[in-house]
Structures are given as structure tokens and as C-alpha cells.
Length: 310
Image: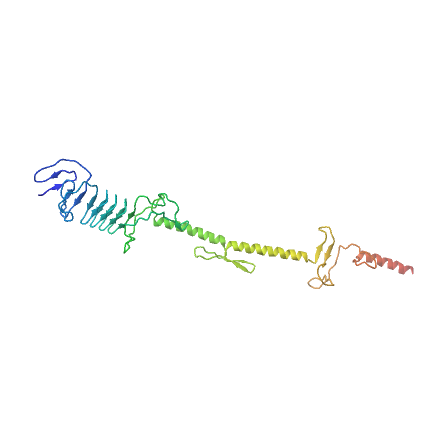
């Protein structure tokens, strides 16, 4: 018996030609490159032998290929699609997860971890569960990254992604790095103190005799120094040689709160100074007030008159 079974179900053999029509069916190619309708004719490869198969919607092509899942496709030597609506394309490609695709020889889809993706903002898995952060319709694999001997493939010709679920290419990552470097350099400049964010170099700020490696601590150091300075100023003001009693209208004292019995008004080259602006001191046997030149001049005149009249 010799025949060719066309995809249109128009069967030609030595005896008859049967009706036309297209229906869902499983088609196989055996070692003799014969296309067979498994619903109407016999399968001629060694694996299945001579038997009738039920109506099906799977497709497998290649020796050892098997599409075991409903509506699945297996193409290539020993390609295996075990899950519903899965596709295994390539020699040894294997899929056991529904609605998933294994592309390329040896590629595998065998692990389903339905959890959200990594969130770089928190350095943890995302808490979001929408389709952007958590897949909900199968996996596409171009290698076997979790196999006993893990494999990977380089994906090239990828344009820059636009939507949230588009792939990102290296050009976009380089642009992001340039932007990040610019921000880091600007921040380092603004921080000062020898800071270099890209090299993980912290700044050093000197406040008085203390060093600080961050802005917060440096400001605390400044605050402490200012508080200390105010305290010293207060102490100086409280112990000042010149003070005024009773606010802005009281008596002015010199050295009231310090020791010593002498006051020296000389300048840096040991020259004497003139003390001016003095009011007339009281003249009595108990007075300690300074006498002005005017008072001495008057006394001098009086003494001269007395001397003249005697």
C-alpha cells in the first residue's frame, strides 16, 4: 500500500479518493517523510506501531518528539511538551508548565515559582501582585538555567523597552549609569569634605579639633561648639573687668569681680594714657573719687591767691 495523506484530508491511494475537509488533528512525520492524519490513517513509525489514534489537537514533529499536553506542540528530536498549550521547539527542548515555551535545543521550562519579582527599591521581593510584578501566563525559556549543568543564551537585537513589561537593553542601562554617576558626582561636590560617593569615600568635616564623617554629626558638632562658645562668652561677660550695674543706666565698675590692687593704663609700648571724660570728684577726707584737672587748676589758683595775700 502506498499513499500520501494531505493536510486537507484528501487521501490518495491505490483504490480510492475520499472526501475533502479540514479539521483539528494531530499530524506526524515519520522517518519516510510521510504526513499522516492520525484520526483516519495508521501511524507508521516504530514508536506507536500500527494503531488508530483518537481525535487530538497536539502537534509533534521529529523522532522521539512528544506533545502530551492538550493543544501542545513539540518540534525537534526528543522535544517534549507535557503541559497544556505548551510549546517545545528544538532538539531536547522540554516543557512541563502550562502555557509555557521552551525555545532552542536543550531549553527547559520545569520550575514554576509564582512569586513577585525583585524590587530594587526595597532590595526584596515586591509586595505588588499585578501582572507587571508577577507573571500570570506561563514562562518563556531560551536555555536551561536550573538544569544539572545550567546553560544560558545571549539575547541580541533587543530594542529599548517602552512599556512596563518590555525588556531593557544594555544601552538603557548605560544611560541609567551615566545619570547615576552624574548625580553621585554632584552630590559629592555638594557634600564636600573629600566625599566620593562612587568610591564609597565618606566626607570628613573638622569642627574645632573634632572630625565628623557625616553631615548630621557635623551639624551636631557645630551646635555643640556654638553652645560652648555662647557659654564662654557668657562667662567672659560675667567676669568682665568692665561691667554696668542696673542695666543700661547703672554704675559702671572696673574689676569688681577680680582680684588685684593696681590698674595699669599703659599701651603696648609702655606709654601712658590720658583718662578723660571724668566728672569732678568729691573733695572730702573720705572720698576715693578721682580729681579732675579742672579741680586742680581751681585749687592751684586759690593757693596762689593765698600766697600773694600773705
